Image 1: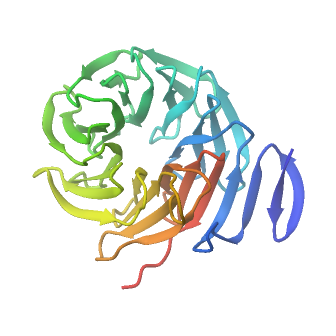
Image 2: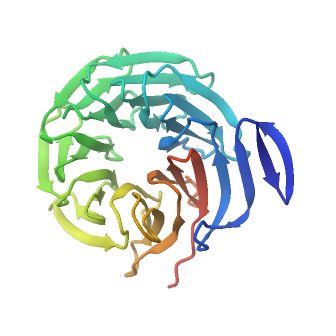
Length: 333
């Protein structure tokens, strides 16, 4: 049984730990506004926010999907059905559905209001690394280590198309805000942009020397942000396929990346490594020329990083089963 700490008081409320206070980061840098500790075995592989910021979901190593209320840190429900670790989660824009996938190579769709499974989509032949709902709410894209990107119809779970265009194990997929393009990246460092309705490649280029772990479209859809094993983040012009900016500062592979809803900030999380700063969360103001701000380090690799919809927090998920809420810093102008 875990506990709740607020204003110096401790009381038991269930199988999770929530700390709501102004706490120094693990290395004494920026404050963690809130810490949510999940149950034993629920090491966090992936996170996704509901669009209103009221709750989020965590995909966990024990095969569970945990739905967490943000205000209280309370576990609303635990969704079970996967046979193996959950590596990817997503929430539909209307907050009605949760998607999850992982090492069992199955995409599962859940009713977010009651936690019941409503659809199962099979076809991938290796573990699924990434998922995104399309803006129309009728489709979903998945990327897998079987080297395939698949576009699914949510009305019946059928596959519309599959693409081998990336040519390597897929680590990340994303959909442009207008819903017309899919981007994918993987283990060779290649990035490919495809037509969302046909799967036909529109552009492809080599983005990083040692593989890409994550990528995101900008809110306007004209930029892509990629996170690499080479410790770098790159911002790309999608039309010209040229890098606009390269962000350096992480000391190990960059595993996860997010962009704020207004497109002005980027958050990133890194892998483990020797020495101070091996594992950590950074925030970058892309409107200014600066090296970014390191919020702090974590005991385990930062598998997933998000901005809250209101842009107040950067939220990180790690293999110690902890979801950390970091206050977004003010950047000097």
